[in-house]
Length: 620
Image (cartoon, rainbow, N blue to C red; front, side):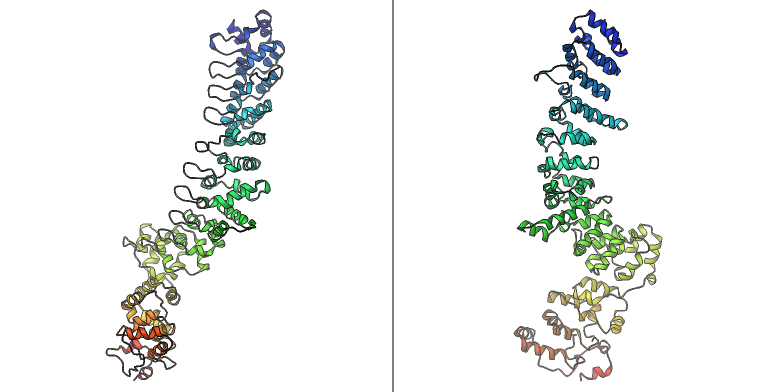
């Protein structure tokens, strides 16, 4: 008899159902022979919608109620749970009709609250997995179940995996369902676990899968959870940045007062957070996503929030003095460094447009943004930095000894001659493994670059600006230029100038070390266009350390007259009269500024005096 009833349900045989009702006791249909399923379960499996609708009219109300609630003994699914498994909208509608055909007391269990063996309701079952081909049908079925429950009790049920229906709706992009749940008059922690240490934040799913309205509702409903930190020390802003998710922050940036609190948290507070293990701010993480606009959005949002501040407090002052684009991570990288590592030229250019001084900032490897723009092949950033200022020598080289010329192969061929023309004087510098730029070109097998580096005559050498290099105290740059310039004496004669006339160093020992360089030593008594020696210039700018170093050098002439007829001793005598410190210095090194020596010191090289014989005779 049971098999006949099963066959009738599968076949949708209404006449057999009528026969059973007429011949058998009322509880016959709710008996489960063999521990299997009831007649409603079979009809759902066979998707016999009309059979079920007829059952509403044929069966006694109490039987309908029992059949609705009775679970099968395989997955412990009731009829609604079975219908949810098949994602059949018409079947779910029938369940609703069956439910509405029966009178229920408040104590009666609702079909949509029944939990299967996984502690899931029918709503969980539909939302848990996405079937792309029937995605819209899935969402339609879920909405039908939501309509059965005007109090949204099923939205608060947590399954054995620790998830509510909202979790699955957000994760799988069921936006209509998520909106309905988020707009329900329920507290946030009842529709989503507040144990975020072991549970992903709802904002994790506020990605491009979520509609703009869902994201806004999340900001309003869960705003106080925005700054929750996971086991890595990441906030939700770190996670969005890590995955290059622009949309949530873009919605905030363009949002009105309804998301004002969330906007402040994201753009003014969370953008600075560095609690994660690698001490990256969200802006550092965003900088690594070449395809993302999030870095620019974060900066614009921060600037917008800072402009909205009416009463400046200490935190706001600190934020303004050290904005997020200036913060370094544990590796010493600013977001500009990070963007160049990722070849994210758009963001790098945007950051430079906001703060050009960042091109002077170095990371722990002593890598400048200029160095990285060459190393990672970012020619537009390279051009922009050159427009901002002439890179200093230390910007051309990092800790391992490599220079920008070692990495020319990363740049377009048309860009390389410009760098070689400007920095020809560092061409032969070796890294810590004694490798030159030519060695790197050969290793990378770049024929056109090998050809250029092998034949220096192909390089149109630009003049080295030793004046600025000296003023900026770039001693290494000057010495590198001196060591690699084969015609230094001729160059200085033609220019009527030398590096010694301009050098500025911090200590007397630094000057004495500089003077010991063999090429520099030959320039000690050269005169410039005004007839002044390096000693003249040191005294004129009142550089006591340099003057002392020169006065202590036996090869330095003290009696050469400049074009105004003044010797260094004349200038020194004036300084001693005006300033007691200079008089003390002279006494300490046993130099009398008032002693006018009429003769040149023994061993003077007349050629180094540079000008005409007539000028030399003036000193006798």
